[in-house]
Length: 112
Length: 111
Image 1 (cartoon, rainbow over the protein chains, first blue to last red):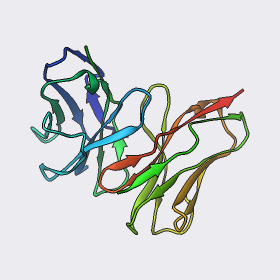
Image 2 (image 1 turned 30 degrees about the horizontal axis):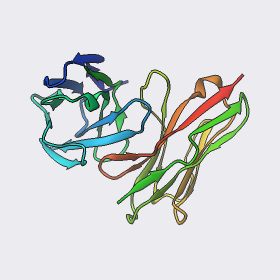
Image 3 (image 1 turned 180 degrees about the horizontal axis):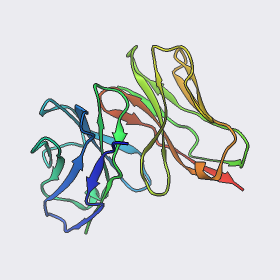
């Protein structure tokens, strides 16, 4: 069964550093998403991406964040200058035309 | 703005019993999707069940079923014959383009 994959599973970085989180969505899906979940809290929507551009973003998704689909398979989330409060689990998801979203296993980001 | 509310932060149920998790939401849209996701300790997000708002029939998936009351904007999840493996956080979600998640209900199934 096709699945969304994410790498790395755990990323540790120092405050102020740039990080790139990688995702490989399901191959025939057209919509891609990033979410984050701070430990013990709910899952929060960050951004959705369709047809090589952002289709919707939340207030959390400020200028520190960017997304890219550099090739036909990867979907990345970049945080330019990480802050302590960026420590969270980051989930990638994908879907066919908006409907059921399939989530990846997540990347745990720890900012020290 | 759409909101999703889960008023039960924690619940427990005896193995083989039935439990109902509540969820309410607020929206002005008429067409949308609602989901229940399960998040076990591994923190993987697993889709449990989905409901299209235009469908009056409540969705059912094996031991999981929903009670969807569109007018009341209520979307509860019933788990029948609870199993130890059902122990997890359960999130209700409302879908526009992204998903809007509730704060979750931590369910513990007791042996």
